[in-house]
Image 1: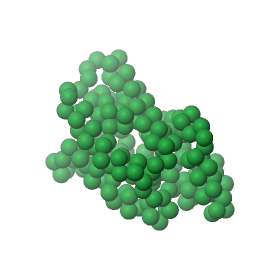
Image 2: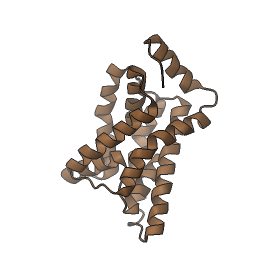
Image 3: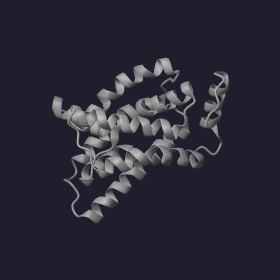
Length: 196
C-alpha cells in the first residue's frame, strides 16, 4: 500500500511525498530511481534507531524489501496524471494508501519501517506525540530534499501536514487490542515520561 501510495503521489504531478522529495533529490544527483534511493536512505536511518531504543523486526525487513521496488514498479506503469480533478484524486488516494499502510503495519507491531521506527523511537525517547513527531520529520525532510533538488508541490505540503494526524487516528482503529499503545506506554513509564 505504501509503495503504491508513494508512486501515485509522484504520478499526480502535484508534488511527491515528503521523504520522496529527499529520495528524488538524491536520485537526481546519483542517477538512481526514487524507489532505489528509498532503500539506500533507509539503511542509515536504521542505525539512528539504536540510541533511541527502537529495534527492527520482520515488519522492518518487509518495509525495506517491498516499498522501494513497489514504488519503482508502479512508476514504470505509466506517465503523469493530467487534469486537475484527476490529479487531486490521485494525491488524495496516495495519501490515504500511505497513511493506511503505515498504520496497519505499525499496529501489527512486527517492527516499523526505517522512517516510522525513527518516529516511534523519538516518541518513546522524548515522549513526543506521534502526530507532532511525524509532522516535524516530514517538514524537515522536505526542506533537505528541496535543497538537494527534489520537487515540492501542493501534494507535498498536504501530505507533510496530514500524515501524522491520519496515522495517529488510524492506529486507534487498527490497534484495537492496544498492543502498540501498551508497549509505548510501558516504555514511557519506564523512562518516567508521560505520552501526549
